Image 1 (cartoon, rainbow, N blue to C red):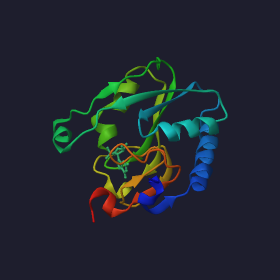
Image 2: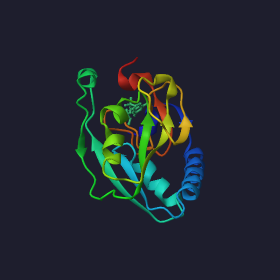
Image 3: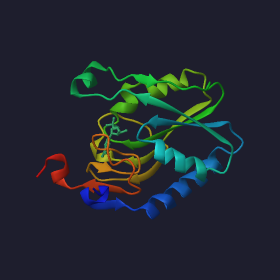
Length: 184
Ligand code: 5GP
């Protein structure tokens, strides 16, 4: 079985992603020059983006990860999204850049209180960098400081993003064929 056979369309090629990640890395390097910077990736989706981004940053940088419980429609209204794997590092006086794969409705960042939580640990600053932004789907206001690409309202996979736990390893970002998720 070849994973690529399930892809209907490639939205962002490996080359387009690499070019943009390099630009983001250069911009972040300029903005955080002389500052104690730590990237905080949200597992699992942001792992691949973070791994490339950190190598495009030319100033000293640390990184760590958090995991957040996923939500269904019910947990959303109940506000039960939680941090299920916390940081190993102290954030005191550090400049934190949260790294996300995609901001869609905005609920993950809001409901997890992640940004408030990180700020309360005496971080010097907390900002957000997302590879993808789907602004047409936003339900909760989230301030994003760095965006890789704006994407239209399609469910995308690859470069860390999954469908039912699969397709994260694809090097590009694409859209699945409808028959893959039972859409006929
Ligand atoms: P939000 O809470 O902003 O609606 O969604 C954020 C999370 O939902 C992302 O971190 C990601 O895990 C998931 N998500 C949202 N849109 C997509 C998509 O198009 N493809 C994939 N694979 N995951 C998505």
